[in-house]
View (cartoon, helix red, strand yellow):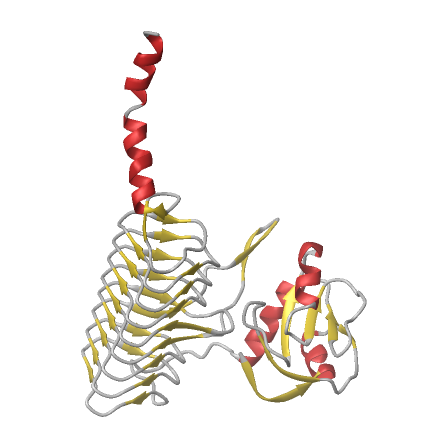
Length: 311
């Protein structure tokens, strides 16, 4: 998430009321999660296990819960609770704005686009040309839709990321300030849910087709011309490259990559990254021929036990 203007380290420290290490005028351009940070961004870290990863990342401002040696060319924001203060920054730069109409006056809707009754189109939503948005679709604030997109009834784009920190009193939500971006010629079925990024974009690439009741987690990037069948669940921060096919009820863990033109057969569970150009099946998902051989051999276990008994 980029800020509307450049801020100084001192300004940001004042917003969250914390100490800082570095030049007071050190430039701050935005805030992001560690997998999408760039120079000028703030990243937060609150566990020693991840200090080095954060300090050596592309981020040039690290919001951290201990004063440590600051790498050259970077700055620190020292907080007793970086998670809380990252949320403070999200509230400050991307505050929630309540709606007073079903279609916001700030929404941009392209020529030839049809929006059926009972849709909600939030603030700063952009919808391209010749789209068809069926009844009861919800597009949260800042969602971007390309040209020639079809979204079927009941789908919701832009809900918050499922991202929580466990505290003694319960779970504390990390606020979402990102977007959902749908490129051109995408089809989205009925009752799908696509969560916005925490600070970046959840993206569906050109020409991809998504069946009914599919969930896409925060900050996931789906490539071009993918096919995703019904009841598939895709976790956050997944990268699905071009022309991947996921058949019904496939589930994934977070933070993995599925290579271009991979095919994952129905009801498979993906626990690690998969190479492209192969067919996968089962849990954990493996190349389908190997997995089917394993299942065939399992069926032979009683027979093998009897053979061993009779020796």
